[in-house]
Structures are given as structure tokens and as C-alpha cells.
Amino acid sequence: MITRLTDIKLSDIRGVIFDLDGTLAHSNPDFKGLRAELGIDSGTDILGYIHSLDSTQAKMQALEIVHEYERQSSLKASWIEGAEALLSFLKSKPLPLAILTRNMPEAAQITIDKLGIDIALVLTRYDAQPKPHPEGIHLICQQWQLAPADILYVGDYLFDLQTARNAGSRCALYCPEIIPDYAHDADMLITCYHSFIQAWTLGE
Image (cartoon, rainbow, N blue to C red; front, side):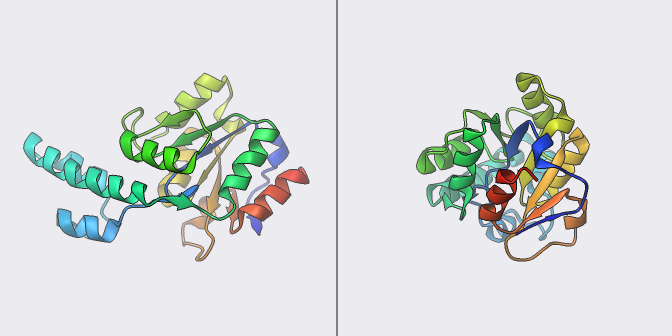
């Protein structure tokens, strides 16, 4: 099902940007194991921690650990239920589609190639400042020549909501199981992509 928290109308949306891991694909790294290996607490922003390291060598070593976790999780990627059908439906409308991910390019491409995700415009944390910075959405909107307010960003985590808000875009939070405490910042909650397709079909 879908739940609207604002006056959002899908008929007003002119482009859709997706997060990748946890939104289109089961490909999230083992964040608990990764944080343990890095020696940081749960909830600590991994990229923020690496940026705070003093020495270049320490940053490179930490990044290599992160890269390996990302590669391994991408090699095991699988479709999230209904995501493939959703992309096919949106392409038929047609609407421009893009992916904005915090992942590194190699891991993102592994997931995209493994699943055959047919989205050409993909920005990673090396193409724009990482979420929740709005640069990625702004760069995509520039390519599409659309205003951020006309865009729907679909993600599964707090950073996705913050990114959309910072960019001035609408945001749908994919939360198939537990609705997190930050969900109130979304325009729409999605528990099932098939229901999301139905809402688009009805022009709601």
C-alpha cells in the first residue's frame, strides 16, 4: 500500500530518481560488520568518519575496506519485489529515470549489470557530493531541464529524505516492513511497489 503524508499528486511528477541499494536492489553492504571492522559505533556515518581521518593513508585503508564490502554485496544483488515491474511501468509512461546512490561506481555498476537495470543516468558519490547533499539531484535536474520540485526521489533511508528536502524535491520512502521514526519527513510511504504502480495507473 501507499500512504500520502502531504498533498503530493503523482500526475504532477515529471521525473523519478531512485536510490539503488535497499530501494531497487537487495544489495546493501553488511553495515554492522563494516562498522565493526572500522572500529566505529552503530549509527556513525561511515563516509563522514572516513572524511574526518587525519592521514591520507588511514583514509585510503578505510576506503579499501568499504570498497570491498560494497563489491561483495553487489555481487549478491537481487531485485526487490516489484521494483523491476515498477521501472518497466515508468518507462512506458514515459518518464525520465535516474539513479542517485552513495555507492562507489564499480559496485553500483556490478549491481546494475547483474540485474539488467535499464537506467542510463547514474550518479554515485564520486560524481556528486554524497547524500544528504542535494548536488546529485540538482545535476540530474539540470540534465533533464526540470525543476527539483517536479522530481520524485524514491529511497529507503533517512539520507534519501534529507537529500530530497535539501534539493527541494518530493520524496517517497520505501518501507516494506517497519516504518521508521523519520518517515514523517516523506511525502509518501510505499510498502509495496505493486500498489505504487496501481496509484500511478489511476493518476493519483
